[in-house]
Length: 92
Image 1: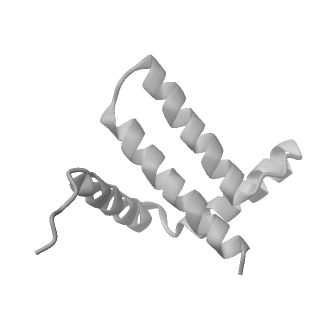
Image 2: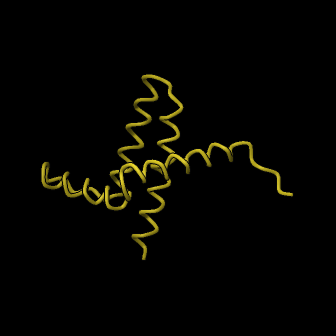
């Protein structure tokens, strides 16, 4: 039997959060595409989905510096996973 990493439960929690947020907010690809469009239309700012997710990671780290909350790290992990997902889709 494989031994479980001590941090595996945290990654499972992140996956549960991602699934829950997906049910509540909808598909991340579609949501980030809307954010891309809004940023361009409002501010003439052209950011990719990946770059937007990087901004969200920075936001979580900024909040963490001000006040510790585990949720900041869990959300940052999910945004990092989205970056990998968007990167993978860009290469197709």
